[in-house]
Length: 113
Length: 111
Image (cartoon, rainbow over all chains, first blue to last red):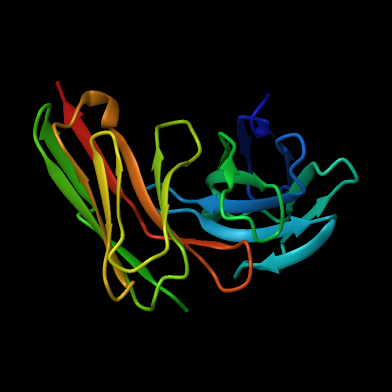
């Protein structure tokens, strides 16, 4: 079975632009979470979605938004990009909302110039 | 807000050496997890520990959970170049699926 997939793998944007990152969870998984990992740091929680509803939100500005589709895939949107948004964006999927094991995708590397 | 502190931040050793990395929490862990992340990849779960004093072994890796459930250690015996990566500890936050991560320990094992 395929693991968590994310697209694109790399992305370069300029300040002020908008970006959309995509995630497909493992088949059968209904929960998707998004994390931001700045170089040299651990991942920071952005959002969790379960059954197409937002179930958790981290300490990120309103420029960050996400949604989950009926097939449980998810998009993360970031508006008005700042240099500080440059990071690895990780998607993780799990069977349910409170299931212990989350499976991470390889991430999307975003560079904002 | 719970803070997880890992030490050391960076470790460079020769193949065959032993090492220990640490994770300390500002509050009692709910469900401590250890991950390894290789360059260009997402974190991969190594182990979950929930009971104070628990010790788990995964081949050459030994995970120990403190009695008070506020600290943990990861010991690697006879490190190999394949052990190179970023080691992260994480805790599940309350009654959610949110994971709180430490900043990680970057391990480099030289042949």
